[in-house]
Length: 157
Image 1: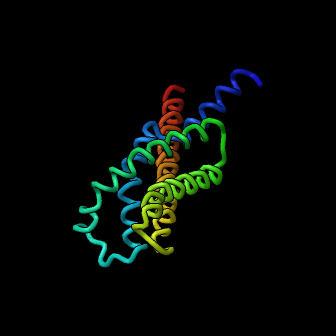
Image 2 (image 1 turned 90 degrees about the vertical axis):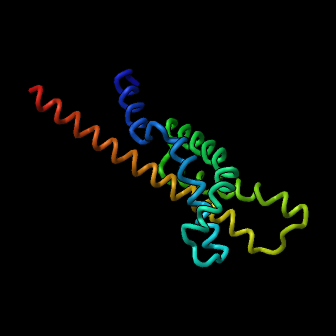
Image 3 (image 1 turned 90 degrees about the horizontal axis):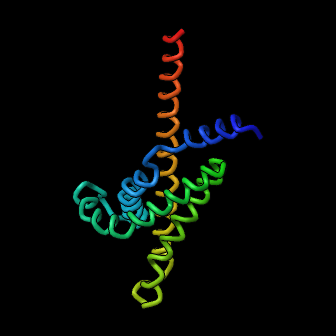
């Protein structure tokens, strides 16, 4: 493969990511996961006061895993993984981390039954939604940058 072709392939992969990809996921995923967990577990009504009260624990438990998930996704994108594969990995990563959070509580006997297993499902869903949002944002930024390049070349001619 020629160097020019390799360079174009690398640029195409970079366009699929926003510059602050992992940080974006670390900021957006924890509150979204908290809102989904509250909704799935039946909290009514899920309003601003309830969401504000769970933001600190959500960031405490979810910011670092979301950042690591963002780094993992960045690695997958740079290696050329498909969008579906990246979303599947995000769902499994988010759900797996939701299980890791619940494991000590199950082992201590603090929680019982299957209802708490909705938390990993909500975590996985939050990971997929947040990653989809990040991909959409990257696509829009790439389109805007592409339009700027097109305008620049048109003005130069």
